[in-house]
Length: 143
Image (cartoon, rainbow, N blue to C red; front, side, top):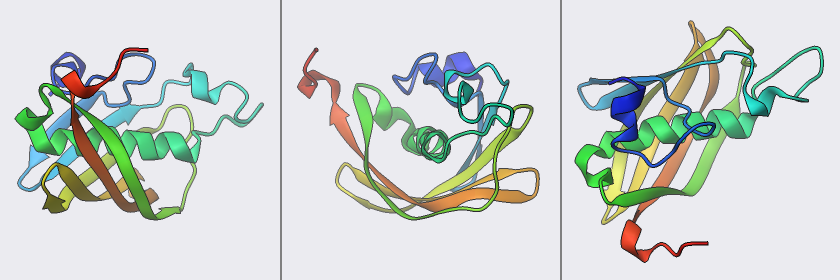
């Protein structure tokens, strides 16, 4: 799936769309994001040594994970419900490709529990358990 196809499922748009490609591998999704170096979140984090913030790595993992539910995303918006056992192991920098491998570990109604690992090459950058809830778009209030 390319970026335009991904947009038909998740509501995220630039500059917060953090999935460039996605493929399915059995029960897993493999999503990729190419860190270009001009992203807003690298400005000032850190001068002379741009590093992707941990919270952005979690967002990359979350967006790739949400695509696990496929068609159920249509008409719904995924919201984080929790982050558990998140560990940051290596930094991510401009020029890196973040590859997230994720699977649904459990589900209760419209709440999904995900296990995910983000890597650059063979180095684990971030791993943990994420949960999100699907909220019907008609229940969202415009601000």
